[in-house]
Length: 436
Image (tube, rainbow, N blue to C red; front, side, top):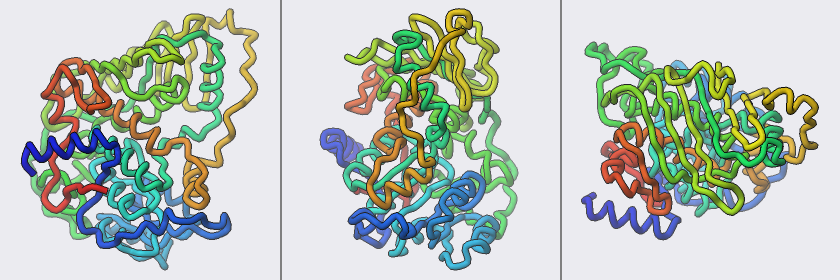
């Protein structure tokens, strides 16, 4: 595709809001899965793209339905899952799995660089999708996935499982009740660090159980290296992941996104160590500014991770991961399972509002219910897409080395044309994205 063609296609996508993407020639063109509701007692026919680690967690949460297909590029992982689900067909290439006509929905738990190709290929066929966080590998992919899901009207859910917990619901209710007044600032952090290091010089043979070319998928070709990429360390490499920000921010930033109704930031500034062309930073600080709306004032959200997490923020100990909401009347610190208001003396008699957000059926179960009867999910792609865009924009700002003035409608940084090369990417031959 020429540069002029790319610009035309991008402009048409931004204007219509309906363009999506899918892999070329996946072979089936019906949208049977999304056509009519199923009985709650009728099992959903599922394809699992990924079978180990986080994918195993999803399998355990959906195996009460009917798993009819399994896909993994690692024969050891695939073989273990196939022993448990002996009636399921097995694949190494998710494109082949998607050709299986009886699959109604797929669960995608792969490295980040496979998320959008697999998700969009499934959506193009009308299949419902549960995809792990971050929803995509690039900002542009997140926009494409969001639009494609809306166009095909499939049931979607991003794998931010903590969203289904009771504690997040209570914090959202407290913030929305005005307990600490209007929120002007939020600090969010997570302690992991995926980054550092150079590409290995050793080139051992590819193990016979590993389909390395399929693992690479749309990413640039590179030699296999033992334990350097597969099964977990891919997160530290720009070609496959996005460091700790991409790994954990969708979980923790989810809470202020939900409580404050955030969507697209207006400005993004990131600081960290010197940029490495191949690997992510071991610590990053990102400041997102969200413009005022009729419902709230301007909000500054600051993300800290890895070596960039201070021991205390506004006098409150950090540790682990969490959020501090800064209001005109006080502070609220929250993590996955608890919350606390301060100053303690002023809130010692505080009584939280009665629960108003309904209890979740479970993060995976919400999606299964939606697949069967169309009930809404709480992390559908209309919500998860903008959250993912915001998260990944932090990495874009870091990689270009300057603040971004963000025009969400046009999907571009108005002050930094160089950001464009990090908002999207090239796809290896045979793995290009096509319109839904």
